[in-house]
Amino acid sequence: MLQNSSDITSITNKPTKKHGGSAAEVFLVFLKLGVTSFGGPIAHLGYFRQEFVEKRRWLDDEHFVHLLALCQFLPGPASSQLGFSIGLLRAGWRGAIAAFVAFTMPSALILFALAMLSDQLVGPWGQGALHGLKLVAVAVVAQGVLGMARTLTPDRPRALIAAVAAGVIAVGNNAWLQLLIVIAGGLLGLVLCHGVTRPTQSSFDLRYGRRTGIALFALFSILLVTTLMPLQGFPPLVHVAGAFYQAGALVFGGGHVVLPLLKQTVVDTGWISNDTFLAGYGAAQAVPGPMFTLSAFLGDRLHGGDGGFLGATTSLISIFLPGLLLVAAALPFWRVVGGGPIAARVLAGVNAAVVGLLAAALYDPVWISAVLNAKDFAIALIAFVLLVAGRAPVLLVVTWCVVAATFAHVVG
Image (cartoon, rainbow, N blue to C red):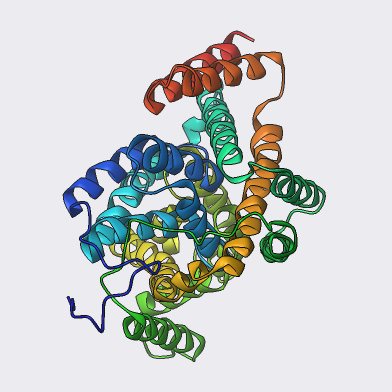
């Protein structure tokens, strides 16, 4: 790993510092998140903020949102890219790989087992437990929105930007509109946030520079172009890798947004049946971790189950790889956003817009898909109080929501 002066780039203009952690530390933290982060990609942001901003203080709210904004600009799974970036900043390349493996592995392994048990998820006990996981997401996202709003919208201009962003996205929610709102937030910040003049500072740095970033982007591009070329005569797994790489490289928004493209990739081509695809989708909602691990389920079931472990592993790596290459390529260039007062105002607006996006996501899809009656509201409210006032561990909150929702669902 290069560590000379020409290949070390700070995320800000501060001098390069020694990284603050080890790959083992990163792995253990993300492993815990990998087995407790229920609720999908929006909820993951709340879990990450609680773990890395509030609890461990690996980064501050501004830096957290800057990384989040970058991941939202790029195609791929935003929460996995964010986790990969945090691991990279904390402990270098080993930390990045440790974060990805630890956060992804639990849900990928669970989906192997759920592939054979998916029919049992349709009963009242299974449905009650699934609904409880949705209520966990309500509490976690609400806590994240509250904390970020306090830090990132401390004045009227930024509160206004957040409110407008939330209102617009609530009316017309799609991935491209989210990107436009982030851009508009930056422009409004430039005009309205005159009181923000200090560039953002960060205590983290990268161990590589722009040359490495360019090389990573070149690798991403070469692989994408290769997958778009005819692949006749190659083994079936090469076609599988190419199809899943395209899905990861060409979808903006991540999570549920990738589902139509995956359906086109594996169902319309006849690789798996539509019933199997829907069963995998249901199973993916039942497990913690990134939604993209659905690819492991699909890869295992290719051609009626002939994909097996090799098919699952190929699909899993292929769909995540482009997003991780892109975020690693972009990070050395992202530091320029903190270079002066104009950029600071732009970022203040971007941060406020992201708060608005999360607030809108708290309503749709998190709230409207989970809080269906007064019982649901009571369960979610207690979970929220446990997190905010009681500072209860997430696992306790998950247990409360699942047990309470299952009881309410079964008893009626």
